[in-house]
Length: 272
Image (cartoon, rainbow, N blue to C red; front, side, top):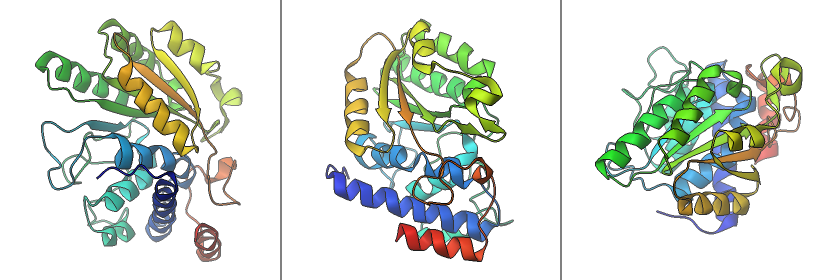
């Protein structure tokens, strides 16, 4: 299933945002801000770009996705449920003691999750391994890895970036969710990683800058990345933390807390 209509993709992204709010509210904890900021990115990947089949979640020929910023799991779970990997009813069990949907992605128990993540900085190394394996075995898989702009303060990200360039992993596409906020404040205040594009370029990456909420720009960026040979691509997506919920947008306090009932009702009303 590949959706090409931008309006339909925007509708899917909105559904994922509703799922994010429902998950975090019912779980009474979670990370809504950075989940809402990457909903459009996941929508384009799962519904327009990636070679995947929910009926065969372990197919060797599938493309891979690594959510390196694992705390944004509500967005990933929303996308997987919307795509048909599991029943949407599972979403309200988020972070429940017996739920498969824990606070960070678990590849052993959740259909469609390609890598267990959560310890920031490690996902890109895992994605490198997947991409290198695919090239060595001539499998033809593409690998996508979503990292946070706060996460790229981790040194391991740049070791992995150096390796990706060294091994010419042109089947690897890194996406930076550049919402400019992390748990303790703005990126500039905590540990500035700007200019992000110049840094990745100096590490040998093909760099594409986009509006991370513009579906058409995202499609064109990922299409372009597929044509690049001899080097990995990074898509730097400028986003808004808490996108879609007025009182959460650009508010660092919504990095990791759940809405109360009143806030939940307002958020769902806005998204609906």
